Amino acid sequence: MRLLGKRVLVTGSSRGIGAEIAKLFASEGATVVVNYRTSRAEAESVVRSITGRKGKAFAIGADVSDPASVASMFSGVMERLGGLDILVNNAGLSDSSIWNAKVQEITLEMWRRVFAVDAFGTFLCTQGALPLMKRGASVVNVASTPAIAGDRDGIVYAAAKGSVVTMTKMLAKNLAPRVRINCMVFGSFGTTWVDWLDKETAASYKAAIPMKRFGSPKEAAALALFLASDESSFITGQTIVIDGGEVLH
View 1: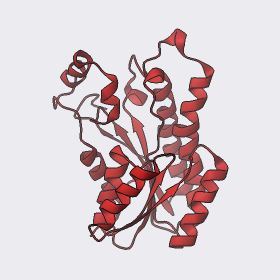
View 2: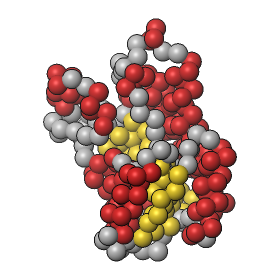
View 3: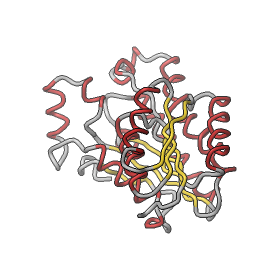
View 4: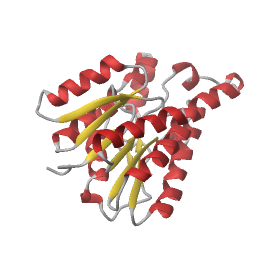
């Protein structure tokens, strides 16, 4: 088992890619904290899925954009686990109206909402985790390909994720050699955002991917496992693209 005895927090892990990461990490021997903001029932379902397979997990609610809520979450993690070995900053805001907004439709409030979760939340959780971590700990962040290659849609999201990419590089310099921090850069994955697309648009997205399909949450979880484990012990500050060859970064 690649994470035997490790203590892990995965933010935004009540569904989608976050849930797959939590399940995979638990199957590799980790004790996993399943974080959610409002989806308590779904988070508890993920926990039951893990414990039903003899894994170790519990759910904890927190809004990653709220400093007080983040502080409370890490206090709870410390109380129950005594420390933390791995943090996966997976939580992100999902809103089709913001994703599809044209330049003249974008408001400052949209910027505030997305950055509060995707950028500020990533930093707050990393900052909160550090006092709980010892040498050899790992942080895994999440960004997306528009942040490095550009796109017509998702301007606000791309900018927020771009800040996560830069943050990863800056923090890697600051935290090494005690803590490693890397960033997964997702292309088009088969998660809930696909529901925002009509059939024609979805088909055009797939056509632009050399692998001719969307990625699966399990494939994303496999990359997270590699970056979190000692198998990547000489990798830090990197942005690892997983996109089926879409941007060839």
